[in-house]
Length: 220
Ligand SMILES: *Cc1c(COP(=O)(O)O)cnc(C)c1O
Image 1 (cartoon, rainbow, N blue to C red):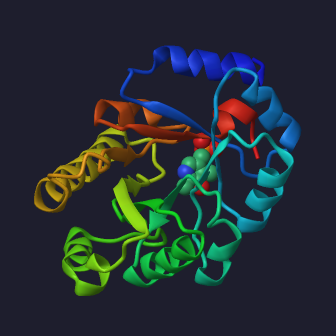
Image 2: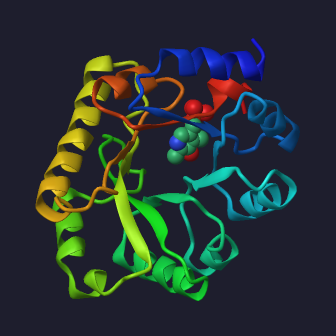
C-alpha cells in the first residue's frame, strides 16, 4: 500500500478521541511530503539534527513532535517551533526546556514519560518520582512549560496480556495525576502510547496520541 493509503486506512479505524502521529524518523522528506497530501500534519522525530533539517525544508504548518531522548544542550535548536516533547523524565530536563521556551517567549507543551515496560533499558519515571517532581517548588516555578499528559512504551513482546497490562498501568497513572495535580487544567489530556505493532491494544486503554512509523513508511 502507498503511504497515503496506509494513513487513510489507519485513520478510518480510529475513534475521534485518538490522533495519529506519523513517526518519520530516518525517512526522507519526500516520504513526508507524500504523507502530507492526505492532510496529516503531525509528524514525530527522535533526533534533533534530523528534526531541524526537516523543519527547515518542509511546510511550516507541520506540527513537529519530539519523541527521542532530548539532551539539554540541544533543546535550543528546537525550542522555537517544537509542538510537543513526549519524553520528559526529569525535573532537570523540564527546567532546561523551560529556560529555552522563555528565551523564545513561548510555552512548550511536554509529556512526562513513564517506565511501564519490563525491560530496564527504557527511560521513564515511576509514579512516586513524578509526584515528587510535580510537588516540588522548582517545578511550580516553571512558567514556560505545560505538562499535557503522559507517554510510555510497552514491552516489545507478542504477549498481548502483558502489553495490555502495561498500557492499563499508564492509563491509571494518567488518571491519578489528572485527579491529584491537574484537575483544573484542561490541557492535561494526552495519553501518548501505542506504536505500529501495539497501537490497537493502546486504543483499548484510552490512548489519545498514537506514534506510528514503520506501518506507514516501511521498515527502517
Ligand atoms: C520509532 C518510535 C515509534 C514508532 O515506532 P514504529 O514501530 O515504527 O511504529 C514510536 N515511539 C517512539 C518513542 C519511537 O522511537
